[in-house]
Length: 381
Image 1: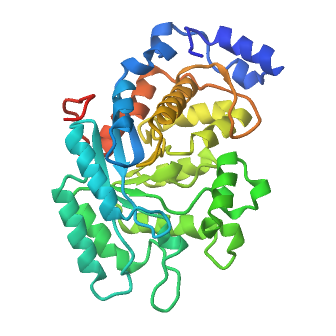
Image 2: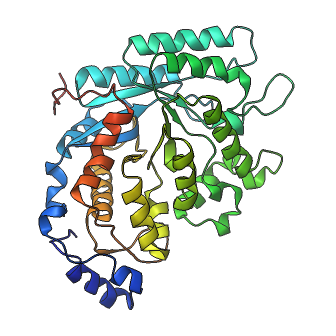
Image 3: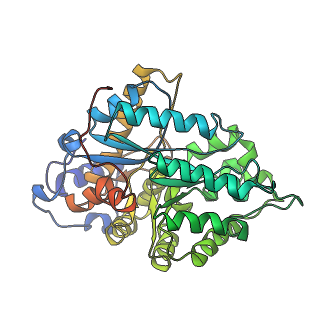
């Protein structure tokens, strides 16, 4: 459902459908001219960026769908023995798609901690980064294995503020490359499954018990993970940092706002965390709306789509296109909505066009200056 102009009609519809509206939502905004907002019909007409996907295939289907939906992509490499393929293979997929679809996709390289306890780990890491930059990598992904599974030679868990990472981070800063940091996990990760707020988290941590920290009380707490990330940012104030997945502060926009205020070079992407914004909007629409308005220059649209070699192209088209359109509805309309992730209804945020443009494109171009703005193709060469 797309917004057709003012707040009034969809808001009243929401009240009739869901029984009652709070006064703050009822008076959220006066009716405004239709030209201030996008509608559902604008979805394919507006150039957009999905700032966090994983294209682990040589097949063209996902890129063709991106072209149809007018998205540019940043495919993210990571290295985790529990999540194949290895980073070297992911890089080859990325380089293939960049050549096949020039201007449509860019990639973020990563660092490996496989040989962290070996004397030559630092030199190996810097050499891999240097080669990646020469091959066009526009960012570096730092993954949750740091803080959640990496141990040093004494058996101690290693956090991201460990001094051994400082020369790597300084090297990245010197090359004017941003870091995308997936550090920690949703706060739900430290809760029993039945207390988690989002069904997707319940499923993921049920299927991936290694990373369900509630089962591993011997590991650092959620608060310790966030503190280590914050300490790393304090040590490197010149680092351009994008916190993946709403910076693992998805549970409360007030907590995220504190970090954005404290760290002026920090932004966040929304990859796989839009349901958490919707969950908060169901409880306090005004708070989420006003947070996005205030921090409109620091938020990047992203999905965390994972595309593998065995992804069915027909199912992919339906799932990807429909998911993107639901997200678009949330940000551009004030329509009443529901989610498969939780039970409470909520209303779309109906953000002004200028804010939507920032979230969907301009902020990605600002945070990832290496992303190609050149000619986009819809067919592989």
